Image (cartoon, rainbow, N blue to C red; front, side, top):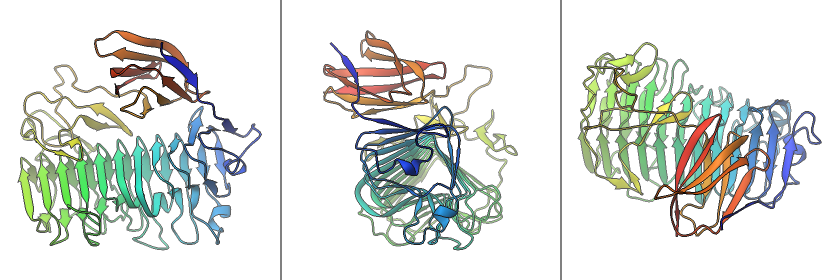
Length: 473
C-alpha cells in the first residue's frame, strides 16, 4: 500500500508579525532539509543572507515577498556578494522578488550561487547588478532557472561586466520559460560559461536600454537554443544577438551550437544574428528559425567545421514573416505567413534532448504545449487557426518530483502553495492514489512503496493543473 508521510524537517517562517522578521535572523539556524517560508510583504535593507544548509526549500507564501537591498549590503566591504548567498547544496528558491542588489565589487546579485545544484522558480529579479550570479568554478553543478523574470541587470559604474544572468564554469545550465529583458550598461540578458547550456522556450529581449548581447556563450561546449523569442532593440551597443566561443573554447569539447525553432527579431539598424569564434566551433546547426531584420554584419558570422543550415525564414524586412502583431511584439505568425508549414522534423538528439519543440513560451514566464500538425512551422510558435480549436493550452502550477526515475521512494514540492488534489495514475489509466494535500504547510511530501512501472502524477486545484510522467524501476 502506498504510504505518504511528511518529511521530518523543520519549517521556519519569516514575516512582519513572526518571531523572525528578516531572513538574516534565521539563516544560521536552519538545518539540512528544512524549509523557510517568507510571508508576502516588503523587506527593506536586510543584511546579506548566507544559506549554508543543504536541501533547503526557500519559498514566498501568500503572494510574492519583495526583498529590497540597501545600505547594509552596499556597504559590506569585507564580504558583500548579494541578497542571498547560497553555499549549501540542492537548494530550491521559489516565488521571491529580489531588487536593487549593489555591492562594492559591483557584482551584487539577487542570488549568488556557490554550492552544488540550484533550482530557481517563479522569482523576479529587478535592478540588481547581477540577477543571478554563479561565482567561480563549481564542477558537477547543475543550475535550473524556470518561470522567472529578469530586468535591468547591470552596473553603470562598471559597464559591460554585469548582466541579468551570469553563469560561470559549471556542468549544466538549464534556462527555460523565463523572460529576461532590458539589461543596462552594456550587460547581456544572459551569459553562460557552463559546459552544457540549454536555453529553451524563453523570451529574451532588449526593448530600449543600452544592453550588449541577448545571449553570450563565451567558452563553447554544448549549447542548445530552442523555442526562444530573441529580440534586439534600437539601442543595443553590441549588435551581435547571439555569440559563441568569443572568449576562447575552454569548455570540454565537442563545441557544438544548435539553434532551432527560434524567432529572432532585430529592430536595430545593424546587426549579426549569430557570431562564432573562428576557428573552434565543431558544428553549427541552424534550422527552422525566423531571422527578421537587418543583418549588416552577416546572418551567421564565423566558420564552423560543419555548418548544417536549412529551412530558415530570412528577411531584412520585419513584415515578411507576417507576425500576428508586429508593433505590439506578438511574434506568433498569422494566416498566410511563409513560416507556416515551412519547417522540417529534425532527427537529432543532443545530450538526451530531441531538437523538436514540445513547448512554446507564454506570457508571462509560462509555457504552452506546442502541437505540430503535419510539417512543423518555422520559428518559436506553431500557427493557430482562429477558426479552429486552439493548438496550445497554458500549463497550470508546476511541481518538482525527484528523483525521476525513482526506485520507489520520491519527494514532491509544489507551487503555488495552497490546497489541491494529488493523483497518481497508472499507465493503463487506473488511479493508484487520489487525495487532497496541503502544499503550503507542510511543504513537501514523501512517497514510498511504489511498484515498478510508469505513472502520471497530477496536481490540480483552483489555480489549474499540471501532469508529469514518472518512471519507477
